[in-house]
Amino acid sequence: MIDADVAKSDPVAPGRRAPTSSSRFASAALLLLRGRTLIVLVALVIVFSAISSEYLTQSNLLLMTKHVAVNAILAIGVTFVILTGGIDLSVGSIAGLASMVAGGLLFKGLHVPGGALFFSVAVVIVIGIAVGALVGALNAVLVTRFKVAPFIATLGMLYVARGAAQLLSNGGTYPDLAGSPGRGNEGFHVIGVDRLLGIPVAVWIMVAVAVAAIIVTTRTPFGRRVFAVGGNERAAVLSGIRVKRIKIAVYVISGACAALAGLLLTSELGAAYPDTATTYELNAIAAAVLGGTALSGGRGTIIGTVMGAFVIGFLSDGLVLVGVSTFWQSVVKGAVIIFAIIAEQAQQGLQTRLAKRAA
Image (tube, rainbow, N blue to C red; front, top):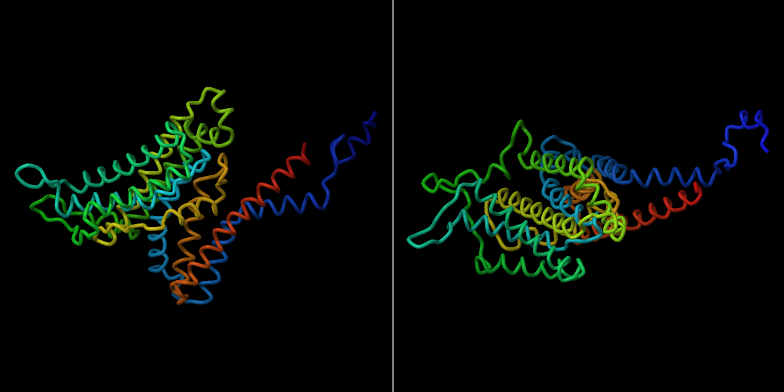
């Protein structure tokens, strides 16, 4: 029996071990790993600012943030899929397909008997996003109905969507998307070129998508079910969660986000071409993982994903600004992805070790 006076004077609760130096070190290391994205982002800003005086100028920061917006929107959609334990490799091709659909509608319209039908820019944007959502739904059907592994299903859709984008114009480009007053389709440049309150509209769209995603993942039953499916799908089924519907929803969200990103790219360029957003899926997945989203599912945050997109974007633009070869840029990006995976595994290992000690 423990003496009451001893128990009161002892800062360590009875029956529990005092924290050792190794456990304190592990806790500190875990804290650093959890904040790794912010640490890397700050380090990048410091390093590139020291190398180039133009890096931290207002104009360059706005330009880099505008570039980040496209990858961040792609990564947010991919994050929903990864949280359920899946993967979506087709987002870059979906962006390209949505780009070509929107470009075709703006450039030559929809051919109908008697001529061509032109739509307003708002309708074209909605159609483009709907195309992305539809392709996402096809991914979901392959995964849920036909039991195709997400990696294989979305890899196949990567080629299908890219091929469809090329077929729409026989591999050509829609060069002029400015529209005309007579057709009533002017204004597509607004989302990719114009600014609102001095900030690019694309950045405002990224903020809106991020805020909506944060609310959905943290404040709604749907968000909790997404985490539940990724954490333990069998337990989610037993608890009454309609897992198939959740998976369909996240792939549709991913496709819609990919299409929106493709439209932003197309608006910025002022032209649509089939290779839009090629390999962007790798940047999106890297941003999600770097931001702390576990590839096994069940753990991650939208804020972390957005910060991961900033790391990828600021790194890419910084390397270009200081004149690093494009070949070395690929090497550095690959190293960052490897680092993200290693850091994620290290975080999981430390969390498991600390949980066992606490138990």
